[in-house]
Image (cartoon, rainbow, N blue to C red; front, side, top):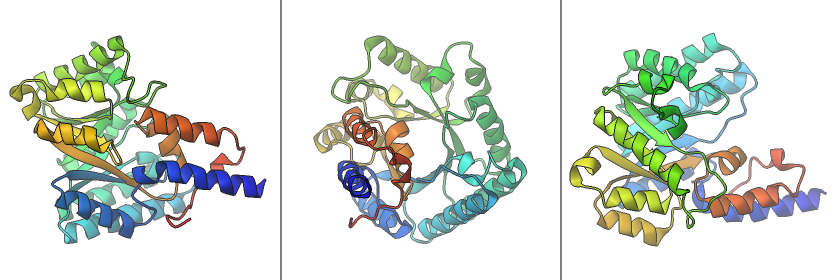
Length: 297
């Protein structure tokens, strides 16, 4: 069983390694610098979701603070994205509040933009309350939401204003990047982006769906001017080149860290790669132990 697990670990990591900028801050700094030199803005995030005690939350907080200081010192063109559960929100909300404030203070000192990511296990309304509190302390922070949060009449939709920075991100479904989203879903998605832009919110779309991005690229300049398209690291290069030629405002989402399995199974946008990885994971009962794979394995 151990040999089987090790083999599956290696197979999965080879499938997804181009989607993850290594396991250390040095590896992600190198990737961020390369992307910046190629003309891309970036957003970096630490892959570490399973916080069950205050010590781990403290470790993650320190990791973010040191990473923010390092990127600021190197003057990298990057945002930093974090999940409140990483900082202990599910363990001790009071300690989490202190941890969040320390990350905000580091970002303020370094002049970096922050994002609070979506988490299915935490209600969007709860995260927006946290976001509102954080924004009073540091205005240069945004909130990530899913399209279903933005339907007409939804509580989340009514909580967002033209002063907000909003990142819209779908969680992957069974369709692949080549198949694209079903027409009804794609239209609903486009509609919620349009509503945000009309409200004068600063909008980023994190997605890899070629059909949706093609429609955005062909939209009028006024529509595209206030919209940033963020692609997942490792996105198809030929498709990326087409988007570059359309002169979109573009960024690259760059995850790093040892705890990459949740990212692959929950957040990875490229459906085909995700399907293959999940298929391998489902063949082994030890999937939860796949963290900590080095790039040289």
